[in-house]
Amino acid sequence: MMDMTKPAPAHLAPSELAYVPFVSVHNMMRLVNAMGAETFMAELAAYIEADFKRWPEFDKSPRVASHVPGGVIELMPTADAELYGFKYVNGHPKNTKTGHQTVTAFGVLSEVSNGYPVLLTEMTLLTALRTAATSALVAKYLAPKGAEVMAMIGNGAQCEFQALGFRALTGITRLRLYDIDPKATEKARRNLEGQGFQITACKSGQEAVEGAQVITTCTADKQYATILTDNMVGAGQHINAIGGDCPGKTELHRDILSRAEIFVEYPEQTRIEGEIQQLAKDHPVTELWQVMRGEAPGRIDDKQLTLFDSVGFAIEDFSALRFLRDKVAGTDYAEPLDMLADPDDPRDLFGMVTRARG
Ligand SMILES: NC(=O)c1ccc[n+]([C@@H]2O[C@H](COP(=O)([O-])OP(=O)(O)OC[C@H]3O[C@@H](n4cnc5c(N)ncnc54)[C@H](O)[C@@H]3O)[C@@H](O)[C@H]2O)c1
Image (cartoon, rainbow, N blue to C red; front, side, top):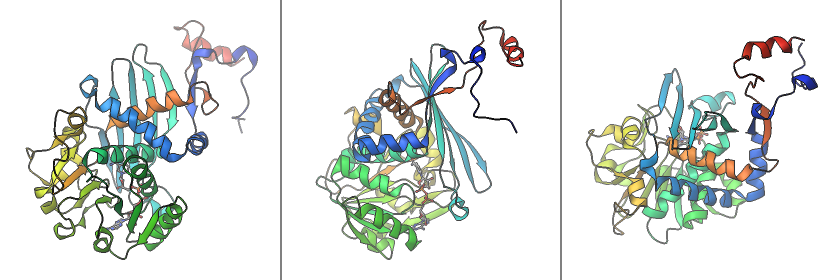
């Protein structure tokens, strides 16, 4: 068998241009632990907010979704004048039954000027961090003032990140957890008590939402699910709906949507994938970038029911890639990966291969 770890002989050693900084899962975990997840997400949220505030500068399109049996595989590209980013991500709700994760991801950031990648990174962890940072950032604009209690329905992989993001950005300290699988709730309770939250494990979604100012739905099921019915939701609450993010995959009863003020990332994508796929194509929604720029109102009174119909948009991943590039520059959190063929003569790519034969 070929020895994959063997370094190239000196005369074939990769040149500077061959290397792309690579952040492995191991190094992402080191970085998150060194910074603390809450600081990480607070700093990341600042990048996301800065990019939302310059929304018109981005090249935008709904993500490219390949629907496959049991799930979806998506490519999420966007670019500004200097940088191009994309993420590869899947969503397979039944994966956990076979020991796989529902969501895995990796991504690339490149220079627009010459197309060369400047970062390749794991994004399974980074997606959880950016999703939570985005949710918490949005809640800063929409959640009722002084909110301390959050219901969390769906206690899988994203759950703890959401909780920590909300504490870092909005001051949530008490959590009411519910999952159809009690083992998931037990896992989240253990992890989050360890992080200093006050936890109530609940036996139903109805019980979980009692007394909560914010409700996060974060379930995975490829169907029109009804995690929240209209009677479970009251005036003044903020709903952070994470799990409805694919055609035929929603979490909220339609009646909630008819009376909520709905906020979205990119309407062209959310109308295909979000809770609002259940509504008419022209149902009014507010774009979050406009709220962040002060060009559209966020929450206007304490009676309003606000809904963040989150699906996850490419600009959030772009912000995460940009944030990570800045964080790892000049550190050992990134390792050089021999990823780009770099022949001495740029047009002699074939010659480079034949010389390697020895
Ligand atoms: N909006 C975004 O940007 C974004 C980003 C990442 C993930 N997601 C979505 O978030 C969801 C959660 O992702 P994850 O990685 O935590 O998945 P996961 O599979 O790890 O966890 C999902 C949890 O939901 C629970 N669940 C399923 N049906 C339920 C129900 N009816 N009531 C209560 N609990 C129920 C499952 O038991 C499981 O514990 C997925 O749907 C995923 O596609 C959205």
